[in-house]
Amino acid sequence: MGAREYTGRLAGLPTPFYFYDMDLLDRTLRTAGEEAARYGYKIHYALKANFDPRIMSAVRAAGFGVDCVSGNEVRAAVENGFPASEVVFAGVGKSDREIEYALSQGIFSFNCESREELEVIDAIAERMGKTARIALRINPDVDPKTHRHISTGKADNKFGISYTEIDEAIASLDRLRHIDIVGLHFHIGSQIRDMRVFERLCERVNAIKAWFAGRGIVLRHLNMGGGLGIDYDAPDAEPVPDFASYFAVFARCLETGPGQTVHFELGRSLVGQCGELIARVLYNKTTAAGSQVVILDAGMTDLIRPALYDARHGIENLTSQAAPQTYTVVGPICESSDTFAERIELPATSRGDLLAIRSAGAYGMAMASRYNLRELPGAVYSNEL
Ligand SMILES: *Cc1c(COP(=O)(O)O)cnc(C)c1O
Image 1: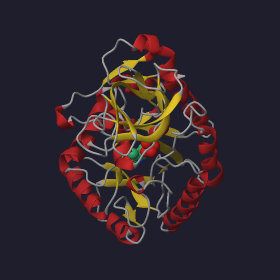
Image 2: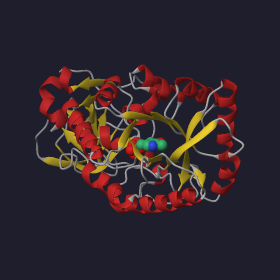
Image 3: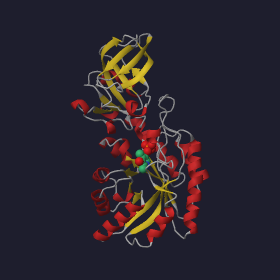
């Protein structure tokens, strides 16, 4: 599966690089699109997961819009052929320049995250002679039961307008003549595998929606955010995430009114499984404590998730089929957090072997850095080999 099928053709290429299985990407996008279409749902791809131009064009070809979290992402989306009318723009700290740019492009909506931001967008829109379409990002206080660094919808997270401030936000709307409230936005976190979390989100949203309806506020759109997780432990068991179950939860639990459209912002689930980080073994060594360590030419600068979130990725040796041994797999960076996995089983591994770090298509290349003045990893696509 994945890079393993292409080992012969990958062997001579300079490492490290990301390998993208473009067939799997297309299958994933098609499945997500078909399952969403059953209910008339619209998907906006969360561009921050991976902004590789070929991935963007595959997403565009699938007919999805984009979810952006910076002005440069809005620009990248527009320059890569996404219609501005399908761009949503979220983020707790949008700068004036980013707001101006997005307004000038006429994006679908700003997901607005504080009372003060409403005032600022209104003032900028007034100055530009425009009206800004706004979805209020409400913090619904739902625990996504995921890693604390990627949990965004609990009462004390920085994201969204707290439900205790909604009253004041609504009271200010009469004064704000250059914004048009078109909907509500929610995004409670990432790598969520438990569908009951999304059920609880729907229940919360139903209550919040009713509250708005009681105040005579018509909401044309409900944006339920993203967050659907992938199977990092068994990528070959579930190469395409279970979009059918995911969208079915919303179809069953979310109450929608006539003409109300439902939007999603999926990132990880669309691109996570199609990418693998391919690295070469530089050295083997044994620590004083007796651990066998494999040192790769890829490190946390290429894939930071294990260092940042204690994330686990499957690791395979593409070269060796020898009997398994227990290894700790690390990168070359001067930090002990630069460790991909501890005490995992791999076939006996030696210098020059090619290793694949699986499920790295989302938040891999997008978070790569040049720390230690390293080169950024390359990219190789299955349909160009
Ligand atoms: C990151 C993000 C997403 C995508 O999250 P995934 O877990 O990758 O699906 C969606 N919406 C917003 C506002 C985000 O910040």
